Amino acid sequence: DAKTTQPPSMDCAEGRAANLPCNHSTISGNEYVYWYRQIHSQGPQYIIHGLKNNETNEMASLIITEDRKSSTLILPHATLRDTAVYYCIVLQMFSGGYNKLIFGAGTRLAVHP
Amino acid sequence: DTAVSQTPKYLVTQMGNDKSIKCEQNLGHDTMYWYKQDSKKFLKIMFSYNNKELIINETVPNRFSPKSPDKAHLNLHINSLELGDSAVYFCASSPGTGRGGYGYTFGSGTRLTVV
Image (cartoon, rainbow over all chains, first blue to last red; front, side):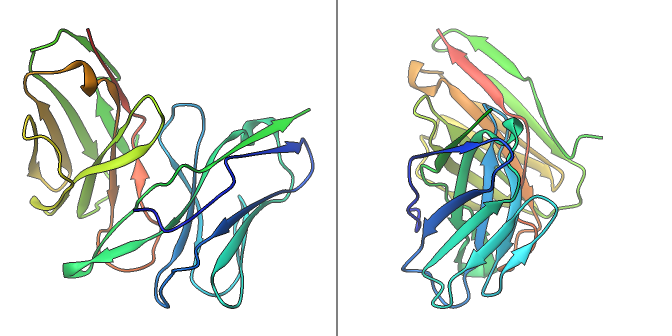
């Protein structure tokens, strides 16, 4: 089962920052948080991931609380092309050192003009 | 070059038929996956292979049989297709082990419609 909860939908005005929250209160100390997005019916696209520290790349920033029980994905200047379903995922490990990405319902972000 | 490529992109077939979907990755990853996204848009993991060895089998009906001839290819064969098999099937690949890294790279999906 997915270990995260997200709001089902959010709106954002074009050009403004989109802040997408995620709760992962049962996360273990060595589990990473990943964010993916799915635009329309395309394949999910990797955005960013982190463990403890805040992270930034060319797409987004990831803010993880000190207790690691929640995080926020920030799209600094949302565009219409950022309209998508955003998934917050805790990467789950299993025997053999393998991992699996379990998707929840995600947040449907609508960016409007 | 497309990192993870799936064929065909669309597949329409009748109930009871057998069909295959092919997937290839050129990322040098050791692990490949099949996911199913149904009409309610939930993405569910089905199978995973690491270096041709099955490591994940998520209670999928045995009409679904994955085959990995080498670590760059993972095909999905479906026997006796049913209406409920209609979905978009995504292939993905990853380095496989470890807790971090850049995660999974997904293909663009195969939309299967069973009529």
